[in-house]
Length: 315
Image (cartoon, rainbow, N blue to C red; front, side, top):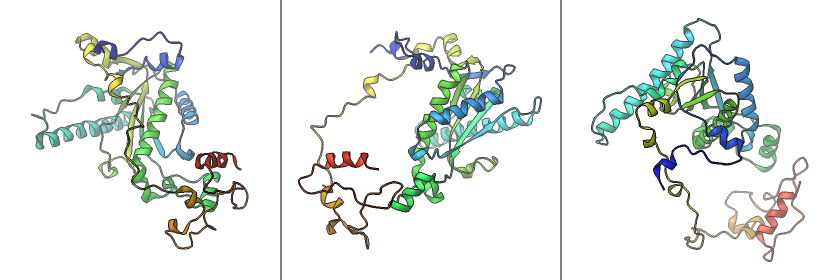
């Protein structure tokens, strides 16, 4: 495929979603005079939270927002400068480490202009991990079916870091679309220390940070620079064929351990590894009622998939 076709496409499609997001550009400088209201930003964030999917509805992230509450006050700018310094310092530290490991030839500590958006943005969002609480439905699962939710246990949060980052990305994508519908621009940064202990000078970053996002009206974009320097055609995306893999299910290794799920769900002693974890403990919860088994019995002649499908429809 021609690399020029892999930059930003202008497809002839009837998709407002595609057309809206296809206009996004990385901001280098925001308009410092044209500032969206705090009420509008809060409205868009709230809307994004409403439409963003989340595993078991925990939404395990905190959105720390830097905003210009008091016009003319320089504390806001100083805080953003402190954040920018954290990012640039991390960038240089990574290059120094790569140089020490022989992975690059030198480390010249260039100030990357892709981070500039944080200094001119009227709103900067820093996402970090959040310790959650069970909603009523999940609490019922904990009480009746021994459900284990890492999102509500401090010592387990690190084990679901990938999940949390993924959910932050889903939210950021939803917020991006909503902002662009309002004529607002957004930019992202992920080059920062990932360990909370590296953020002692930020009282609001107490758990793992996942993303920095800025919102405002763009004034100068990365693409503007690339067009001026005739580099636009160099910034191509990978060929979709290098990313998409249609799996050949006919040529797969056998499972490491085949499990007879029919016997397992019937409480076969060979599958009981914990004390008192017999048939009487392996029952399906009827939400909102007492614990009880499903009416459908499992036997060797039952199709497992059919049984599981029927289980979905039970209360």
